[in-house]
Image (cartoon, rainbow, N blue to C red):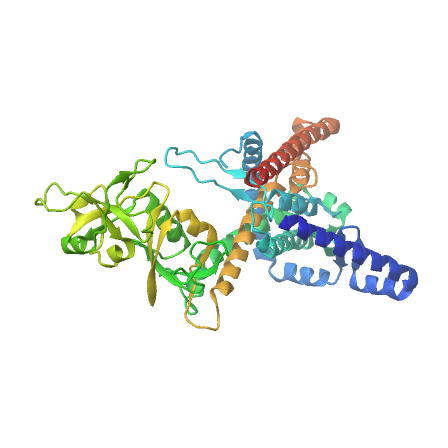
Length: 523
């Protein structure tokens, strides 16, 4: 609903702009027309466009400043793009057939940007413990569906950055090959930003095969460079911000949802620094989720002294619940739980009952440490006691820096769904964790879209760079000697691009349907 509301608001804004555009054109035609021509702006239905020739001189200057470096750069771009093409074809074809249960322009570059924006990026869904297979496939990234609507700004910014870098690559390569740039622009279709470069088509087509490939592959290559660069920045962010933040030591709570069971006087608060859950140390987001998972896979048991048990036992006659658990506490005693005494075969006989009712917080605070329910001999002091709770809940002792521990009995998913955390613990009040998180999130989006754009653009499909690359390869002298008839070469090009377009279309329909299905299932 949030996505629909946001799109409806964008449509209303477009309609208002279109109304005033028509109004000014009819009432203030000459000054308004001069304003549009001077700024390069144009307003159309659900589309804003900006075009300029002001960047032409800068692009020419950049291209001629380091000609040898750029010459080597674009040669590498051709080789890698041609190597990437068969991988992209196999990936898109495989993704089209995979069930998915596991989870206006001078050339083809600009149209490819829009398609890649729809296609999203590449991903590798994680496999479970029972299989070693990993299926790499393309997925559809939709804000409000499989991406938080709150991150739509990062989504749009990442697309804009990738699209601009893609088109600048074409522009730099074109100037290096003496192809005239007629203009550079940016248009926003609904909320999708698309950059474009207008080249002199006749001059481009007159180039030799290799030079033309350098221009056509430049956008793809620059997306790959951008993706590698932003990925390196992404993994280096903790080190780059080490003077402002403590990283890899703990996580900080940046937000709690209103429905979180941890909200309250004895729960968590925004700004809490979490060091560990039970005996599992937390250093970053990955270890946070790993520790939550461990609380289910390896439920905690506690080393408690005999004296403590005798002094604090609140047992009532034992009863059995419907789920098979043993109950030895009064039903109104919510602060206590039934604990099972795990007898160590090597220890002397101790006069303790097998089940006893103990206050959970007192037991944890007075324990000598943790033991595992499958290995009761780990206690150097005391004896091992395991809380008798069902398989869907566990006891989590959340240790905070400079604050008392929070003890929660429930499912770890309650924490993962309703608590937002960050690895960036501020050293100063000048910068909160949101500053570093925002930069890292943008770098993540740029990296994902860079790879997605590169893969989708190299695909032999109408509107993509791959279409023009295939057409150019078929004009090579070696191909012409083997297939001298131009009509035959044109037919081969048509078949390749039609098949490529068909598979891209099938993939987009499939991932859109699966995304819609997920929304309906979780509604």
